[in-house]
Image (cartoon, rainbow, N blue to C red):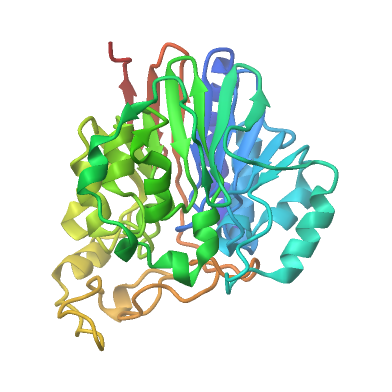
Length: 404
């Protein structure tokens, strides 16, 4: 683990210094690699911090988050926003709070009572930790951050019913979007649908994070009226799983850039890529991992932060389709590489969706083996709407100028 941490320190050292030098005018966003979980750090132009989720339990994600905070010059977490209570989003929360002060907590309130994978022990500890400094958000609530507008748009299966600036138009993408049959996870792990999500605005720059909000919740938020308007950057809902990312959401938001917080086998579904590539204003997709599920549909390598070796990728692309599952269509599921080519921490061939646990939203703690080295995606946004996205694996960056 120490080697992985040192890698992150080296990678972020220059970025962290640059962030300190330019903080007077940029909002800095760090999409941390939690291997198909979520942890996203926002540092405002004044140095105020908002951390969204804390990845999986164990030392791996905790180390990556702490080193990112340190490299970004963060001495305390001013605002800790929890989208929902699955282990790939809250796994390192308790341990992180022992290493760095947390001034205030935000979440959607009590978890869905039918969710099967939420830890009662974690919830008891969390309630004790956050007592007296916790806000259960409802749509329309704001996080007070100097120079930013952070507005909750979804929480506890309730959704914004007023219009944000730029919103209020009839959403024509609703007509072509299917409904309940896409929302399987609302019945399996229903706290996904309770996700607390927000829109953040810095001058003319806008971004949205909806956690693991599922298909039907996206429709409730966006149909028949687009209350949000358009955004510059969209963090893919639910890691790019096909249970989320409805056209009614993505095509109405019209993001210029999408960032996918997927893992090698979690998220990055072919249908998700199709919806993104069909989005009317999308310029680029940036991914935290090259997805085994998508094959040739992955973004160009320069836009992917973590990529396996050539032999592994070749094995994924050339392996025959797996045998059909009982009751499933022929060829269902992603192709799998030979066993010798599977990277450390990946599930075995034919495993399909990862089991309940740190990679899927299982109980906090445990963790999974690291896919190392770990690289992140960073955004620096200016108030005129200009923003630059950087892939820390290769130093590749691209600047997006504001559109008229």
